[in-house]
Length: 517
Ligand code: HEM
Image (tube, rainbow, N blue to C red; front, side):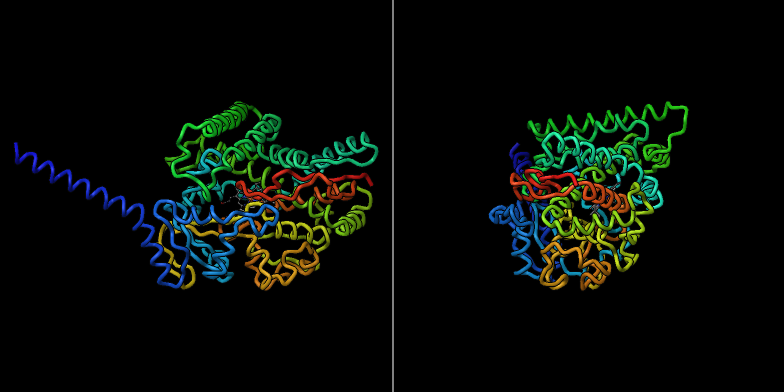
């Protein structure tokens, strides 16, 4: 018996020690080894705490809501201390922050599937984005991208312009009515009108004749974004997402409702006798060729619908809303756009060819150069996206050990690019880098800055936004329609307070004083 107790004690002690070694390995050594590889190559960073990483330090540096550049004070401070590339940790996840344009170029040129989207996106944003185009990696991502992206190329967007003009016309009519009822000038909070415009356009593109049913998912997606915006990975508590808290139960409810709405439309499509030509049909067909066993056909369709509809409605809307705020603050640019639209349209209805007469910004992908002598509307859109890049960060993860230029990146390291830092670096954009000055784009992007890599509102490389042509065209159509019908000024009720909640949004919305012209 005694010997049994001795053996059992030895085994328990051994088991306990192994468990401690395992914990130390998982909680500390894993991350530390990765950091060491980068530190040996000269990339330093603040020392992380066990379990929480640098989150406590970040929480101590409170962001200011009045200046966009002050939203992430820790990045500004660490850049000053450790240079344009440095390391930090959020919990156990190791991050490399990159603002060095040579490094950005390497990421842009890296085409292998060894780099992809970070795993935390799927974990933390699973309810919102699922296993679609935005979050997956490797062959399954490649298949989804090949199936869906060609349907968003410029030749397809051309056919969507009429839709945009029609939806923009509805917005103009609603504002006309409000202004008339308010004796010629009204204080309007523009946010919901803009969201209705972007949701309508993408609902028609994705759900075709069932667009009205499709519209039901947008308020739910917005509620889901709001419910998921806190805590973010920047401030979050580990494992929080699994707790059945009130907020989490709301997230699960909304996810379920969005799923069943989309599946209802899918059912109608599959039962329909006439062939549907919308993007949903492309996804239904695509789900049959999906070879990834961990993704069911339903998930393929629903998650990709969400991954197209959510950025198309929300990211585009937020960009338009900031753009209207900037135009209201700079009436001289309203005058320029108004004159240009009137010159090109000559009283007729705006269409794709007219937009392109305004010297086409043909494609924002980095492989294509911009045309020179852009006209006012394009310059304004480029400047809005420079100063208010709604998605805030571009993120990547090394899925294998890989090399970017001369730097060895160990598997598991996350890479973050804060767009605004690149977009407003005075060494690249000049001393007026934080000012709204669309004129800087008069001769294209390459001539507006010292490094083309410093302008990435649609991301970069293989994962560049597939909806960029649609998004750009929507911004142009709406600015053209609004400015040629109304004059805009900032309303006294407007409070400037950009806040980070998945996207950078105006905390209290944007109120403008709008007058018919
Ligand atoms: C002004 C509007 C828009 C902006 C500023 C924007 C910006 C971005 C950015 C920065 C990314 C990340 C790229 C990267 O990681 O390198 C992205 C990805 C994506 N965007 Fe957009 N976007 C806009 C409109 C749209 C629209 C209209 C759609 C759909 C029709 C769309 C669909 C997507 C998808 C599916 C991805 C993930 C692509 C992938 O990982 O392969 N976006 N977008």
